[in-house]
Length: 154
Image (cartoon, rainbow, N blue to C red):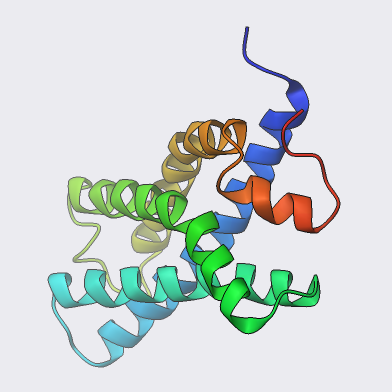
């Protein structure tokens, strides 16, 4: 009914990978934008750019270690992560914008960090099925897992 447990595990693993890159980018982007005194739109823009950068970088490093040349590693990272990061970024930023006061809270405010953590959890939950769908079609992290000797299609 829900597909094999192995493919769900692979989707969760792929989404955790995506979450790691997104969280690094989100936190770094928010810290830098706050330090520089930027507004909400610029903060979100920087956080999104950095989330994509770090998400792609994590995959790029992994597939390079698996033996891919630089060009193929870049194409693989783009193909594996673009949709997943996009969904995660839309969901977590929409969540932050929807929570009253979240974007106005400072970096020293526990409310900001709690809202960001909640946003990332919600984004994770909503991105797992996206990765499951892509993996089921031999796309996204299915390609990356094959490079590392895992069977993502089970």
